[in-house]
Amino acid sequence: MKKRSAIITGSSSGFGLLTAIELAKKDFSVIATMRNTSKAEILLELSKQNGVRENIDIRQLDVTSEESVNNFILKIESADILVNNAGLAVGGFCEELSLKDYRVQFETNFFGAIRVTQALLPFLRKSDQGKIINISSISGQIGFPGLSAYSASKHALEGWSESLRLELKPFGIDVVLVEPGSYETSIWTSIDDVNTKADSIYKDYMKFILNELEKGKPDYGNPIEVARLVSDIADHKNPALRYPVGKGVKRNLILKNILPWKTIEKAVLKRIAKK
Image 1: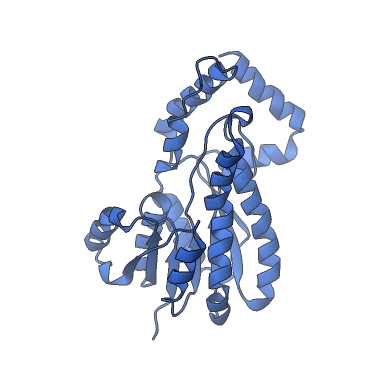
Image 2: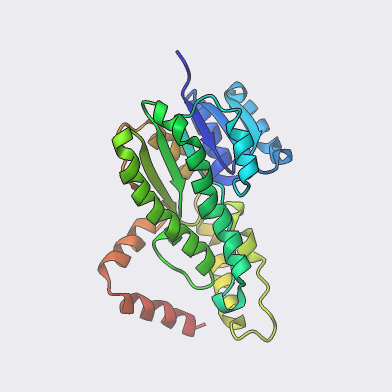
């Protein structure tokens, strides 16, 4: 019996790496892609430790490059599951970010997902259990100061996924959003490395945000939780559209939906003012 196949973008670390292992454990034939295959050592070692090395094929793929995606597709024979995981986080305040910063953010998190999905849809349509699992974020439903570029890209991913689900459901393809809160992954490195100019009017504001991120790190979840959730969704015959995951995520989303925006705004700004 032919193995089910899964393609994962951004598999060199974090959710992508662990998802590759979890799907391989379920005997998926996993194509773990990454922009730079020289970063595959950790995945290779972990796959050997878990006895699933033969189920994982590592391939180069830059989701921001049309040429890279086209070359990748030429070597694909089938696809049952697509996990759009490749992503980055651009930190900073809107006034101090350039349009180029926003374009860089969207090129990976949003347009990259579209580019890969469009290329793989003919293969997914042939599957009798096709699924597209888009790794979003709580930032896709709740905006946070200093993260406007990242939040905007995830909001766009969420809206696109809603429409895409309705477009593809009649063809037997499920589109799913996984919405993690704060987890121990490398995506937040670019936020931590933001250097606000000494004369910036946002200097104290950014200092507060970075302090909050630092204080929250002990409570960050283990990314294996997200990988196992994605693995479970891959087996689900009728998955839901959204799967929020992580400490406090469901509670915050409920509050966002029931409280007036002015109440949320007041609470956030009051907390910042105390700092």
